Structures are given as structure tokens and as C-alpha cells.
Length: 393
Image (cartoon, rainbow, N blue to C red; front, side, top):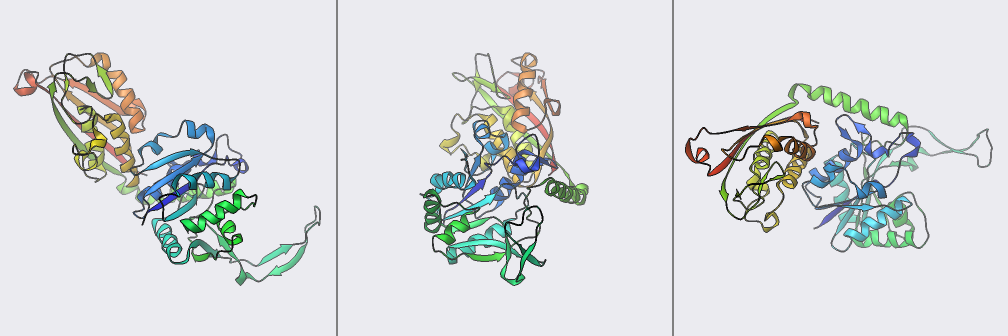
């Protein structure tokens, strides 16, 4: 069964009165959007993800969306939420059996909630998480002007508070999307599906799965993150070591740290053979206990033939983030008799820092020779040692 997720992040969050879209606001060390996307990347039941962003963000998406660790597509949204979801559905509906829709403004969604919603949708066609109302609910008298009056008290047992993710079998959601395109407006896809004549099943929601809409919601979310980070502080740091060696080969460019260095020989390898990036990738993956470069980017896979190792490094950073870790700093030593790396060090540091998602001040690259000893000393190869420090996020 193929399950696709659509992350609705096309709005601008004007009610929160911030100077940027609310999905880009920080919650601890990650943004609202990154936390929401990471939850679906980490969920084993999700096979692909579509993130729908405002046009200006879709044209220049945040780096972590390019290193998600599973298939992820970025689209520009429409004028309304249902337009954005419809665009996302067009991108996945042809191959998905189940489509899950989630508001990016709910950054605390869990894998358990995602899975329970998917399973209910498989059985019933459509499913949404909901919480019972704990308060007495009253309807307001219409047309009362500035003085609001109670029209009636609504039986509390008949009401629930709806959350996302909402999950649908593809053929069911297709009916709702078609109804929305015919001119019917709704605040969520479940409403469209209901109006199309389909039943929607309720599953237990999660009280922590709050939606960030107003400034007070953002304050609560930040307090929740601060409390969770405080609990994890004692086990927040992880260290990984990486090593790589490549022999020189004729007819290939020499690439180190994402920089093409003028030299008669390049390095032999399946990708661009950037030994500096490869050692850092292994250090990052090792710190996150996420395997090694050969596991995720094997030389038997044609996808990685002549691939940019900077791109592989971004992907490794994304894999570490799905396990709850972000890079704090990296230190690497390049061992080579030739060429001299000093003229290119600043450019290498800048490119590595961008791929790692850290400032250049958090990346160190040092060049050493092997004093004429062994294959390195004879100028036959380049070797790199790297250490990465990751911090829990």
C-alpha cells in the first residue's frame, strides 16, 4: 500500500502578527515547518511527501526540505487551503492508495497518530482525529451586533474538536477535491468529503497536537519545546567519527568539500569521490547511529553515479534530523601530499557549512601531509578523518 502525505503550508499566518510566515518561525532549534515535516519523514507508513508552500518559498525552499531522507516534492500553493491541497493531490493521486493531509501549523504530531488515522481510513474510507469538548458550548445569537448574546446551549456530547492529519482512500478524497473545484468552499477536506456524501470516521486525537494560530499558541508551543529539551539536556550530545580514502585517477576532476580544485588528477569513485564530504557523512551518520555512507548511498546504485557529495551530505544531515539530531560542529583533517588546500579552504568551509546547516564558524578543515610515508606520502591517494558533534533537537 502506497501512502502519500500532503503538508499544507501555503498560508502566511497573518493572525500571528509575525514578520515571516508562521511555518518558518523557530521552535527551539527547528522551525514549525521542519518539525511537522520531520514527523512524516520519520513515520514508516509514509512513502512520499508533498509540501505545499507560498510561491516565494517554493521557489527557494529551506535546505532541510532538500535533505528529507525520503521522496519529497515541493509545490506552490493556491489562494485557499483547499486549492493548495488540490494541487498536492494532483501530484500524488495517481499512485497513492491513501493520502494523508496535515497542517504544517501542527508541529507536535506523532507517528502513532499518523498511523492510527491511516489505518482507520483504510477500513472506512476517511478518518480524522478529534478531541471531545471538555467545556460547555453555547451558540451565539446571530446579528446581535457588538453585544453578543447566547442563542442556545449545544449538547457537549454532540461536538468534537477536529485535528489533522486527516487520511483518505484516494478515490474518496478525489470526490472531495472535485467538489471543492466545483465551487464548494470548506475549511478542511473532511468537510468536502462529507458534502460529497461520504462518511468520515473519528479516531482519538492528541491533546498535545496543538495548532499554532495566535501569538498565545506560539508561546505555548515554545514552552512545550523548552520543557522537552530540558528533560533531554543530559543526553543531548552525540559524537561520530568518519574516515575515507580515495586513490587518484586520471580523467576526473578533483573535488574536495564541494570545490573543484585545479589538479592533473581526480579521485576514483562512484560519485564525485569527494573524500572530505564522505568522511563527514560517515561522522554525521555515526553520531546519529544511522548506519554509514555505503548503506544509504551504495556504489551499486546508479542514482549515485557521479552524484554531488555535497548533495549526499545534505541527505545525511536530513537522516540525522529524522532521528532527532542536528549538527553542532564538524572538524576534518585532509591528508594529501598535493595539492595545497589553503587557497581553497574558505570556499570548502562555506559549502560544507551550507550543506550541514551550520555557520562557517562551526566547520574546521585542516590540511596535512603524510611526510612521504606510504601511499599517501607517495601522492597516490587522499585520506580524510572527520569528527561530528550532534545535538538533540
